[in-house]
Amino acid sequence: MSFELAVWHEPEPITRERARDVFQAARHAEPGGVPARAGERLDRPTTPDETPGKAEAAERHPGVAAFTERLPGAERLSPGLVLVTLPPERADEESAEVFALAAECGLVCYDPQRHLVHNREPRGVHPAMEMRTGDGMIVVDPDLRLVSDALTTLSPQNPFMALVVFGEHFVQTSPELSGYELEYRDSVRGRMFRTHVPDLAAVQEAFAEYATGGRAFLERHDWRLV
Image 1 (tube, one colour):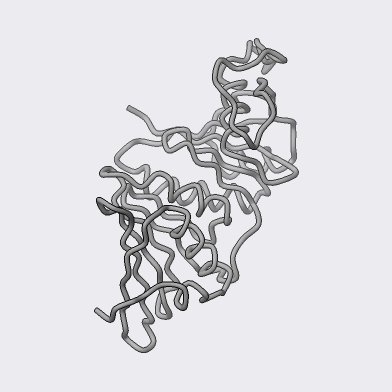
Image 2 (cartoon, one colour; image 1 turned 90 degrees about the vertical axis):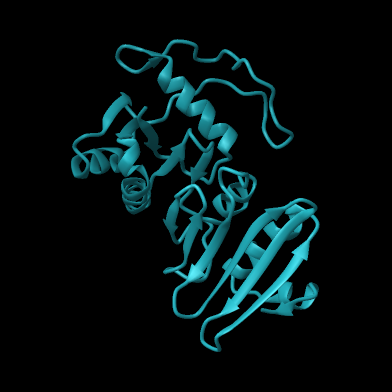
């Protein structure tokens, strides 16, 4: 079974629901890239933060041409959208390269397996920060929406997620029966702290603060030195 990533241009950050709509529109396009069901509602419920879903085609953009020139194996599903198919055994390594190239070309990247979209912005304050997940995803300098959305995918198949600035500090989390274990390490001082938080919202808030240079989460929770 192959691993797929879809790449195209969006002028503003988008939700993963919209990303799924655009990808499905390209999937069901007629030859020549014309959406076969353009304007029809997708057969799924919408979420509170989006209008009723409609199939939409990705627009042409010079970044798409630049992306395909640098990644010759990419397939045009429509004039404005490129599909990258990766072998499963190399998906983790090669997808990180696709994420980085898409960002460099000013494009978004949708991962339909995880139902996650990589936007170009907004980003955190550490350009070298890496997001790492238990199911193998590695993203350098992830956008903040991706960080928040990726935390919702924690499961037995994806048992942890971390934001790491190597040599300086990191924050990581794992689900527990009654909430989440949250850890923070100050690598410079060689100290690790651990706490328990009851819900995902608290984890998302801590990760967002960490990514943007804040440390209020260290004051908000009761930590123990480990």
